[in-house]
Image 1 (spheres, rainbow, N blue to C red):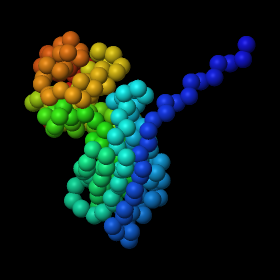
Image 2: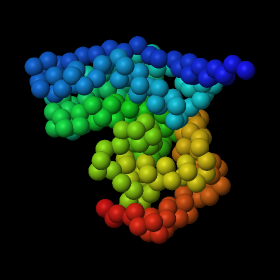
Image 3: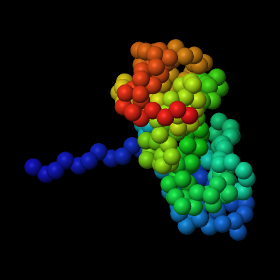
Length: 225
């Protein structure tokens, strides 16, 4: 019997990519182009967003253009735009500072920012900490977590970024693959409320976070910020 062919990868809708470099002489620009190919890097980031937040049937197709702007500024990156056009500004200064692990940092930041182009935000009522936590959840699962990231107990579950990402990862493992995808989907047409977690997982977010902190204590992985 001939071997079974592997199923084809999902056919995702990839937007148009535009690149603008505002200082080609900046060492961060040289590092960027030495480490990644812009089109492939952005395509990888879009596919990571689709993979962890959607299915081929639910993936949004409204984003037509993503513009990546490389320029010097304090900070790391930020994203803004309209329903159809998004712009990601990425700091050349940050890329230079991250030279020792530039490729993974560039790809990780792009994954995080591209998630902001696609994730649902409960009609702009979702807490910022959850927005950023979901973006870093995708970055974590795409394999671009920085070496300093680790699970930790914060004062609140939606402290954001990697702290919330690891909490969401624990929920994904506890409740089953696709749980965070469902949570994202639940924010498509509804305003945010903490009850969304209970609808998706069957448990309140406060109970889940208490169990998560207990899990960190028991496994010795806890780190207080």
